[in-house]
Length: 364
Image (cartoon, rainbow, N blue to C red):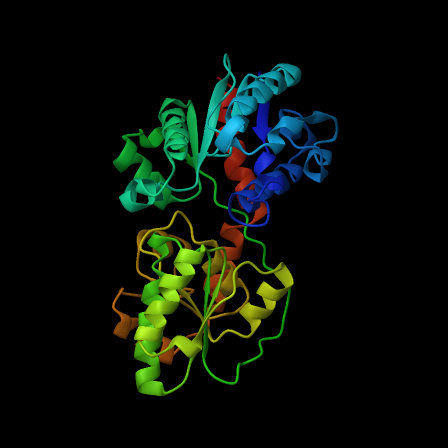
């Protein structure tokens, strides 16, 4: 096979390293390590000096300038770093994985990973960004449309690429995230029903809907509390807590911010149910993590959850009363469905899908 590919693994070591984009890129690295040696030799990596580069042995190119986040000077430095790395690796294809670094080196073909197009579905989100952030995102979308191939993390994202950007479906390859099973922690039922929301308090995740559902649940059951775990701004926290106070459940809503992995595992173990109230998602990692740990999941019936949680979760409408009714009768994930999802979101499955994409472009 002719050609060599350079993969940007920078997100695995950046601010998104623990979750989200960084977790996805680490999954790609894990899947590549499982390939036969002759396949591995076709892939080089560029990123910050660190352990992920070590997994590529002598096929890693360290770029210290990637330590600068791209919202400012890092945008330009990223393009320079990628160009030098592509030359050093003698790569004919570059795989861009970070939407915050929309620049790709010249004179090489390129693959772009698309996680979601939520900002295009949420105009208020884009309106809240700085002009510089909007500029970077437009450059990213331009790179997506002009790329030689797109790796999407779900069919839901692929459908958005077709409908919102007019991308031809035959240019899109689906490579699902690698979702790790997580540690085996015994489930510890809480003293009263405890509902968990994991993720940022972004507008599309509709955290207020979870608060309304808690109020409806407590009205009928007289018990229950709600925990929010994930990043948030002071304004988001204040608005959500104000709503909880108005609904009479202020004492029963906790916003805990980011927490270490071991505390998150403990939160899953003690949760009655995980609530996923997003109206749109590219994938929905916390819900899949929860079902892998045996936690009942209640999610809105949207395209992403139908794709990623089939048979393993309770899907409902966005009506708070309907959600509260599901909260009152949580259903443990179906064992067979969870087993199928473990196979679907494994490193082996991701590796096969990724190689199919790479093989197509490197062989042309």
